[in-house]
Image 1 (tube, rainbow, N blue to C red):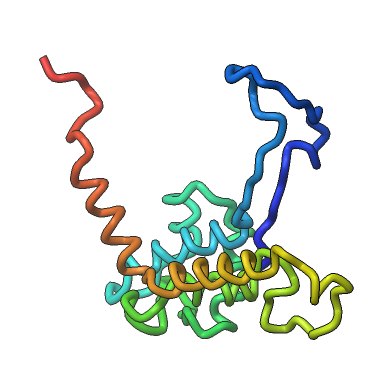
Image 2: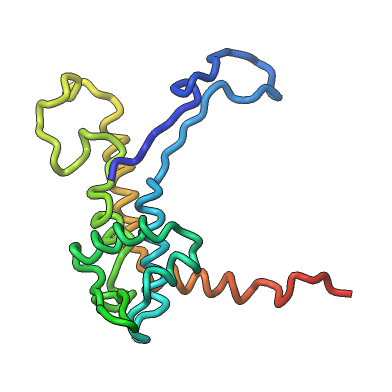
Length: 182
């Protein structure tokens, strides 16, 4: 996955210099995960919650997560080909994880869905040395390499089980009802 990098100036915002501390910033920097990776991870956390209880239908995931069924079907197919889920046909069919949620990292999921996480092309595993004309004089390549290593470390050290546990903790701390207490 190539992490998208957007800036307001790239989207047409005016570039201005000011000393006014209350003025909005002239540009912003944003790195975003694709909806494909985000939705795929949301689907995988639902499969993690259901692990051991039999297959879970994609229609149920779509209902619970409020995501488009057709899109999830495409993602499930990728996850199956990538070996992270298996499918069961029939009335009580659906998808289930191929191994416990503790053994599937977020990086596993993102890599199957999007490919390698790389903020810029020159730090990806498939980069061919010499492709970039600025390779020998690029002052920022080290920064992008450290960023890639940090992202990979966080994603590889975070499992589906941890995501589910974190969400369960948040849910347990939520008020029992939306009504205000007297």
